[in-house]
Length: 177
Figure 1 (cartoon, rainbow, N blue to C red):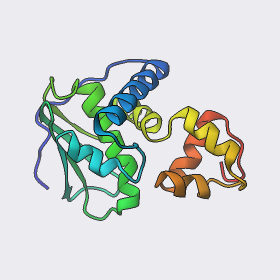
Figure 2 (figure 1 turned 90 degrees about the horizontal axis):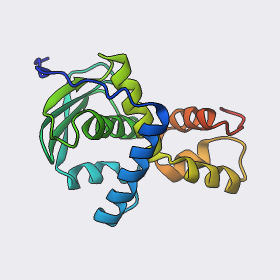
Figure 3 (figure 1 turned 60 degrees about the horizontal axis):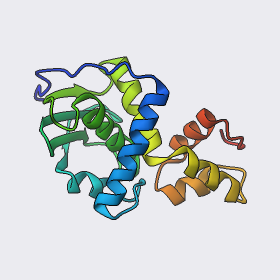
Figure 4 (figure 1 turned 90 degrees about the vertical axis):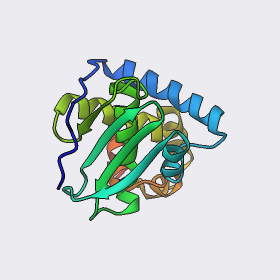
C-alpha cells in the first residue's frame, strides 16, 4: 500500500451538540444547493457533486482514508474488499473529515480513519447526523410498523447495524437495538 497521509488534520474538539448542529446545517445547505435528498442511497453522488471522488485502495475492511487537496478537491480511499452498502457510512465519515477537519478543503491534509480516535469520533457523529438526522429517525421510528431496524435501514439505504447503533444513541427502543 502506498503511504498517502503526509500531513494529518487535527481534531476540532467540538462537543456532540456542536458537531450535530454543523451536520444539520451542512445537510440543509447541500439539500438546497444540490436539490437532492441526502441518505445512503445518494451519498456517492453527493460526494461527486461537491468535487470528491472515491477510489479503492488496499485497506483493512471498513477503513477509509480521506485525502484533501483543496476546496472541492478530495479523495476518499475505501477498502477494495468492501461493499457499496458498507461504504455508504464510511463515505459520510470521510465527508465529516472534509467538513470538520479540513474546513471544506481550506486546510489540505489527510486522515486515515482509525488512526486518531478523537477525529474518528467527531467524523462518525457528523456522519450519523448527516445520513440519519435525529428528526428523521424519530419520524421513521414512529411510522414503522416493525420492531426492528431493517425497514428504516432499507429506507435510508444503510446497513442495519449502522441504523441500530444510531437508534440506540437516540434512545429509540427497537428489538435489535
